[in-house]
Image (cartoon, rainbow, N blue to C red):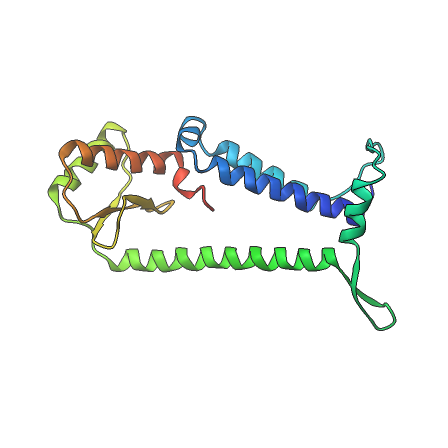
Length: 203
C-alpha cells in the first residue's frame, strides 16, 4: 500500500460525492421512513472510511490516460508559493484542502452552536397547556405503546410544525387553529420522524 497526493485527492473527491448523495437522500422522507436512517449511517461510515484510508493498493488496476488525468494532476500539484529555498511549498491542492477543512469546521461549529442555543431555549419555554393537543398526543403515544415524554410548544414565531431533540423530543407547533384530524396527522407525522430518527438526518 502506498500513499500519494493523487490518492488523497481522490479520497477527498469521493468523500464529497458521498456527502452530495447523502444530502439528496435525506430530503426524501419516504425513503427514510421506509428504510430508516440505517442506509444514511452506512454511507456516512463509508465516506469517512474512504477519507481516512487514502491509500493505493499494489494490485490496483490503473486505467491509462495520457491527456485528462495528467492535466488534472498537473493542475492540483501546481506550485503557488515557495519559501526558504523551497523548504516550504504551497500547491493548489494545499489551498483547496485548507478551504475544505475551514468550511467543514465552520459548518460543524455552527450546527453545534445552533443546537446548544435551541436546547437552552427549549428549557426556558413552558409546554402548551392546551388539553386538546395534550390529549391527542397522549392517544398517539398510547397507540404506539411508548412512554416517551414529549414537550409540545406553540409559538407564533413557528411557521411549520417541526420536532427537535434525540432523547427529549420537543414538537413545535404554529400558534394557529387545527382541526382534530389536522392535529392528529401533524403530531403523528412528527412522532414518526422521532421514532425513525429522520429528524436528525441533517447532521
